[in-house]
Amino acid sequence: DGRPSLKRDVHACEMILTLSGTTNGHLATEGFKTLERRTGTRLADLAAEHEGKRITFADTQAAPVPVITSPEWSGSESGGRRYSPFTINVERLKPWHTLTGRQHFYLDHDWMAEIGEQLPTFRPPLNMTALFGEPEIGETGELGLTVRYLTPHNKWSIHSEYQDNLFMLSLSRGGPNIWMSGEDAAK
Image 1 (cartoon, rainbow, N blue to C red):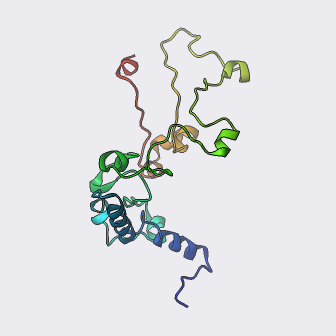
Image 2: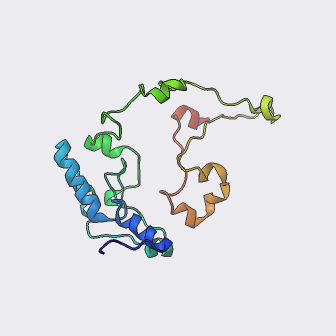
Image 3: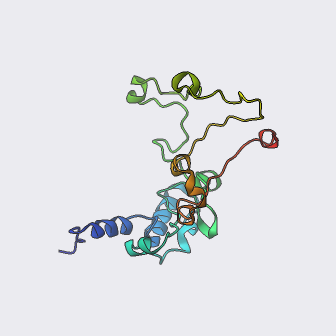
């Protein structure tokens, strides 16, 4: 009947990979062309080098495969660039993935108001000493710096062994990066 078979799990995986611009270069290029028409901003070149590329399930089983820059995401890996979030929004003025196409600071959704989360608010780190009896940070007198570790890739915060696992380092843009002020780094 012309529709793809979904009888096996591998068929479902192939369907997902076929319908995603991150794994189907033709879709990525066409998606950017559509977005160009809507925004008046040059974007299709971000995926053009991979227009003929298609990542299959077998490809992902054989080795880690870099994805294609796509309008589904906000970052770019075109031209060998390492992924950085929101670069397409900032550098190419692609509208943000919000209802208005702009960044939001205040969210006026009813469900956010119900839980008091319309605005970002400061919440101090948990007091691990009071809650769990952990030793005070810096109680031995050595120089230390407390940081908050925020990452969309939780593998870096759960398992330190990923630091030297080459397979894991090749996934999701590689190793953990830390951005800190020059003043803190000098300590």
